Image 1 (cartoon, rainbow, N blue to C red):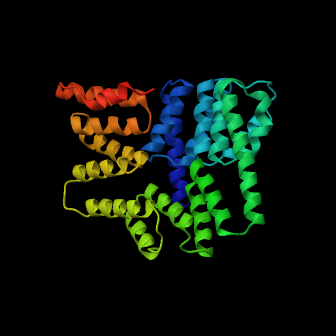
Image 2 (image 1 turned 90 degrees about the vertical axis):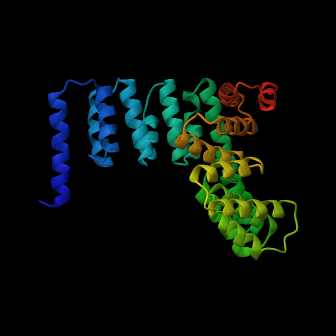
Length: 320
């Protein structure tokens, strides 16, 4: 017997013995399988296989169904989920089923399937499904334009659409196609730089902008200076928390609040929520992201530690 087969047999036997010795609810069994996978004691395939057996025995259990289907989606089986709901005879889907289906369509880029389910959706989730239908219409439009007008601008326009969808790799492919046609086209360089900022590849941004230094626009010096300053912070000999704090400040003050949130959240994860400066920065980032609830939470924590009211607190209180 091959080593992989032996490992599979042992893992399956371990699961069988564990469940035979312990009385667990189906929900607990699902959670335990997720734990075993997280601890790398079983493979993803073994986890899905065992979860599938539990689901088949408890198909009316909403939590079991939700856990199993979401795991299938994360593992790439989005078409399987959509096919399941296509065969569902109920006129209306339950809210959890609608959420699972939306997740599957988004994860698998199956926007074209949204039309098939409009009669089964309702409420706010129907609005989300309709947004997906509009996204599919836009995608068809961009694809048609790109095919008919084989020019850099068409690919760059579609790349912006993909970026808004969060499809980074598809956006990158279109940007690279556009730049291959016109290497230093202003919009191409702009789109590429934005994508590289999201990936925090500031050294590549510097190289790109130095290569295309004939561009004369307002954003060019801002992007170049920001990339240079971020790169300088990264390469400094300062402690890791100081680097994160400086980078978060630079990003939020130059219009990249989403990246700033990543950096400062990482900082708070490292140092905890005991530094009023880090908390105040988090509040300011959420202020820039127009998230009043989270901004209020963090500014209250910061002011609670210092015992002082701040202008930032006043600004957040004035948010609509």
